[in-house]
Length: 251
Length: 248
Image (tube, rainbow over all chains, first blue to last red; front, top):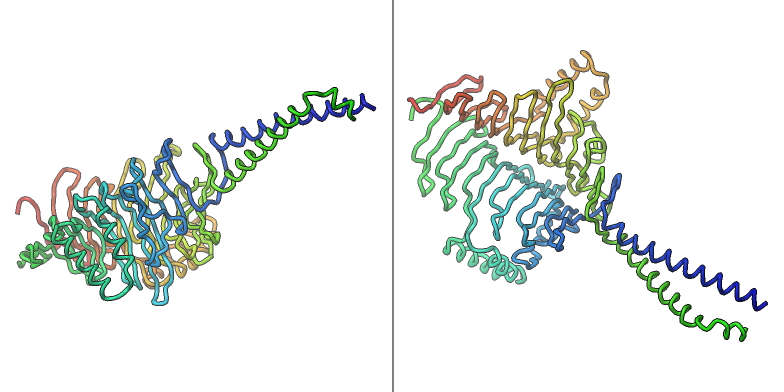
């Protein structure tokens, strides 16, 4: 009886030891396996984060619900929400982990018609988009094309901080006045963006090439309007057309 | 029983070690599993297709090889793509309808090179309205930015006309009926018009073309393959009305 019990205990001990060893192997391999090169036929996922070895985020690919908020100067600014636009897509981040562009799209029916847009944008360092390929539509009013934009030398953080404060205010005339004052102050300090180039079609159904000065004022414009009329226009800094070239030799 | 206890002095320590180890690794095992389920981490993955899906399961993006690239899905209905499915990305709007994509391909077959790449954004409920494209056929290359007008009607009106023809075997009958459908689509204004091209064309010109709502170039900037530069105004029949160059 004693001998039988002893054998039983020994066997139990061996079994336990073996299972502990197996457990260690299985657990370790669970950690090791997910770190290695992994192969799938197809996966469903809501978000993919591409990171540097040190963990710095370089790219997210996601649906709208998991689209990251803007990361500026290492700080996250929840500025995306509120507009009702439900973009999904790719967000790019620079070596410092700050957002520096994206490829996003959205489109849906609305009570008034529809709203849709799609954009590939590259941001100026520590600023907003400097080159953008895009399409935008609201209730059949459409524009699409390539835009090049000058951005101020100041980092975008100051805009984001002010916007956060204004956003937090209650809706009403006071908020609107504050927003206007903010824009005016930025304009006075020369901190507003300036469109430098647009190539595409505009809301008035013209196809167009517009080259603008550093203050965003169109100075040379090539147009084919909705009726097919073609012209090249030179403009002064007040927006007056100073010379027009058309298909007829006159002027 | 008491006898056994005396003969197995190490039991207490060993058992405790086993219990601790087993518990520890059990917990670790569950942690590893939970991590793998919730937010797994990989150094690198090989995959034929990735679906980025909304919380409700609706697709917002498919990244795939050509083999698994999805056919066109609009308003829940599937259509064959004009041309073939390519490797790349297909975008979907909130309603699960395709609204753009980025595709690329290139191969030499029987000594002939065919290659293309494009990033396209579609007008809502319609086909591409702006895109960056590259196309090559045996050394004849074009590349640039394009902007299109698309009609207000849904692209499904045209797609429903073309879809049955796509299933026909290739041959003169298919070609004839395809051309007939294209003609009636043009008459009904279902096709759209290219309004802008900025880039290089297969005749080796660098050019900016602004076209009217019927796709007819009306204003054109050209530097041709020999380096000659000119600006041209054209009428609706394609005749050059006026040409500006360095020598007046």
